[in-house]
Length: 275
Image (cartoon, rainbow, N blue to C red; front, side, top):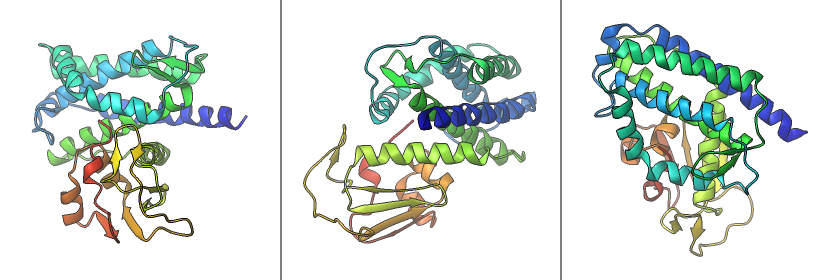
């Protein structure tokens, strides 16, 4: 029953953020698509092409139930990270010679299709992603995270060009942060460091230097009671940008976006976690 409530809440959260992004895309004018990119190579036109491809996949995958054993969220995130260059190439192919406004219209149509499926569809308990099976709960979580990152990329680019862009709904940001924090905790299990992202999440992790892909960690000094001696605290936006490689760890620390105390509080050996 609890899982059903969580899934229903996530369906609402995903749909709400989809509609928020749709409103932004509908409001784009031709000049916006050529705004100087915040991330090299990713102007608004290519960002929309990338989102169009990913949401087209989401629509198709929600119609592909699976009975196989699901993979973990951390393993799926590792796959996304390993294939990020492929997604860029796909975005370039999707964009082709299309104008920005045409891509925007196509993206809006796909968003409406996904919203209808998420809100009204009979969704499978396990989803075949083509790169492993995910529980519906994890599938929704990871795609809320991806959508919030796309929203942030779009907003940063447009704000740099002088546009005012609405932030994601609070629950979408909360879901993105908690999902990223869970991936971080799975990648570096342990109790050496507490990572706090108020007001959304706090997780304990092991020594980043000892962590390896798959969440295998070499032995570390034991800490069994209370708050770990090392603490990292950051805000939601900085956390998501650092976890996804959109901001370097050193830049976040230098800009005072990250406050760290104690030993082993450099997360850069783990980054990026997601893409």
